Length: 275
Image (cartoon, rainbow, N blue to C red; front, top):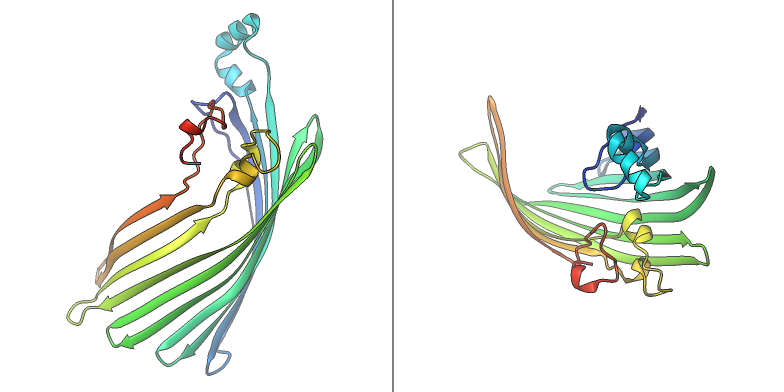
């Protein structure tokens, strides 16, 4: 269980973060030594709540003379944004062992409810549900070499409650990786090399707030693509008492990168090539 709060002053924005209140509760259950093949079962559940406030009052307090001059000239008006998010989720995973082969697999689900506070009244504007099936297979095909591979199939369903209509977007997308590990014979050194592909669905700020207002099929809710990442990793792990050291390197390419540019109209395609 945990609770927290915070504040932030942004140099490049017109409002500061004056409240980042959050609370969370998590529970995990594990059972081991279940049988000759089924090694363990793990279940998790979590609850998160975040209340986020941004306004330009704190900024004005720190720069009172500037705000007074701006207000006198008509360039400054008080503004405030208050959003919150409730998250409920769960995850289950099992581990099976057959001699040199180990399989871990399971499923998870997470639902996020987003609201906006307008003039003291809360209104739910978005709901996003993520669910997935995943599996990871490890095969020690030689005494010093292990091949590890994994896959995940994700489903995301997003719903936006607009002023005129409710918009929905649902997509299924994969992720996968493979890694080869080699244990040196004369040193306590493990080296590895791997490659992976993954896709990232849009978050709330990218999906909901970047709306150009040009109708269904034209705004960010529909037009923005998922970010796609391809990456190659290499590294090594040395365990030689009292030294425990890691070294790693990677190279990756991100396609359909989503870029925020504050103050630039979203419809300006020439300046939003990443989106």
